[in-house]
Amino acid sequence: MSDALNGAVRALDGVRILDFTHVQSGPTCTQLLAWFGADVIKVERPGVGDPTRGQLRDLPDVDSLYFTMLNHNKRSITLNTKSEKGKAVLERLVEHCDVLVENFAPGALDRMGFSWERIQEINPRMIYASVKGFGPGPYEDLKVYENVAQCTGGSASTTGFDDGPPMVTGSQIGDTGTGLNLALGIVTALYQRERSGRGQRVLAAMQDTVLNLCRVKLRDQQRLAHGPLKEYPQYPNGTFGEAVPRAGNASGGGQPGWIVKCKGWETDPNAYVYVITQAAIWGKLCKAIGKDEWIEDPDFATPEARLPKIEHIFDTIEAWTKTRTKFDVMAALNPLGIPCGPILSMKELAEEPSLRATGTVVEVDHPTRGKYLTVGNPIKMSDSPTEVLRSPLLGEHTDEILHELGFGDNEITAAREDGAI
Ligand code: COA
Image (tube, rainbow, N blue to C red; front, side, top):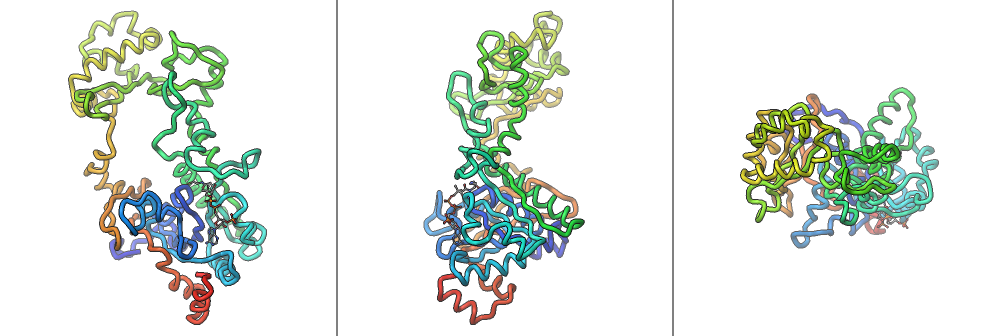
């Protein structure tokens, strides 16, 4: 903890995490736990480290933003866990820590000689938490990355437009989504351990997370057996097959919504706004867009009557929004209680002062990279403040951690000469 927190206590102070994670899903989880105060010890292969250190680099020989934005507030120890000396250190770490988090390809930790049974022998209080691509079943041995999870979890088949191919989304629901689920599993297991005294295994599979996040589509799959999905753009003129179709920008809830163009759309790819025609504000929306006659017209007055004409309705709304910027549309519709949201670009989000003020977007200084922006803790707690600290350099804390584990200088030198650290 730095001085900026003035000695404030954080929710997970005193919890020690043995962090065997790499890429995105696992590091998301351990970064969140670090923000809540846990001491996260990231174990990395000597000389190599987390592969993301070198991926998508924007500056030569500097840890990538990919890495720095997922590994704040952690300490880094280098360890070859396949060498004898490395295994001895790992055993000491398992004794020392409360939680082991990993997202290796299936079986990797067993191949290192650290099966769940072995870990329980060393430390029965250990919580052993894993991200895997799939849960038990036909695909359990497969390696998985974000887009594979989006495709196998139901997101890709239900994203995009009806006449186009399946689409992946920009938000990392498979990786970051699963990391968040795993973090919840870990803190729940820590809470149970208070009473049981025992650790346990925690598994979050990426397919399960994506499907969980797609629950409204599983809902619609079952509704499909009882007739067309009237809020989908395929109704009433298109056709429905056996599976939930892609719904474009339809809202997915009971209130129709769509993305419509705003002033400047011809040159600005983000000059759009999402508008929801919530039943409760229908009259106000009609007045705002100059269609007062729709309020009493039986062809438009009820949600049922409107559904078959929803495309025409959004075309009419768009004819109005195209004469205003997305922010003018917000300024006009917000006071009327009409749900709408501008399509904000990453540039706009990065520059938004209110997100800086809440710590949702944070500027961090790094010794070799300089200043950069990152996302901060999205969960705000009144009694557990978050301070975002830079990610560690590879092996920056190796000696410090080994001393804490009780290794002497001679042992550290010997391990280094052996290539174990
Ligand atoms: N010392 C020695 N060996 C180490 C080590 C260390 N500190 N850290 C890792 N290794 C070894 C592993 O033991 C493994 O060896 P093995 O194959 O002989 O058992 C090897 O490095 C590769 O690790 P692995 O995790 O399998 O990397 P990969 O590049 O083959 O696969 C993924 C990467 C992400 C596809 C895979 O880890 C995976 O499917 N993970 C689960 C799902 C997931 O999290 N996906 C990514 C989301 S961002």
